[in-house]
Image (cartoon, rainbow, N blue to C red; front, side):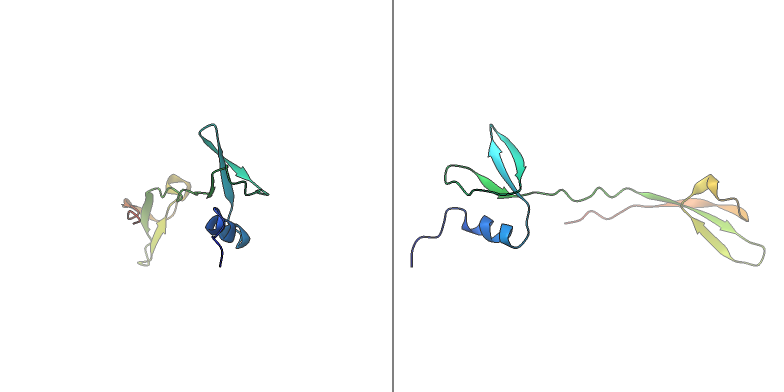
Length: 93
């Protein structure tokens, strides 16, 4: 069995549908059809995790005891306004 291609792991990821980038002048660029040249540096595209923002939830009550939760704030005018709380996303590891 011969020596694996220099880019074999990245080629396999590309064959499975991964986006590939190549490095030129210190910057990474997306490439649709890599040529897998030995002197070129390739990588699987790094996609940052989407930023998760805190969500403010407004609490309203009705005379019949029903509680209404809304993230729309002043856009929702229903019942008596009881207050608000903030849901903060957990840090992903």
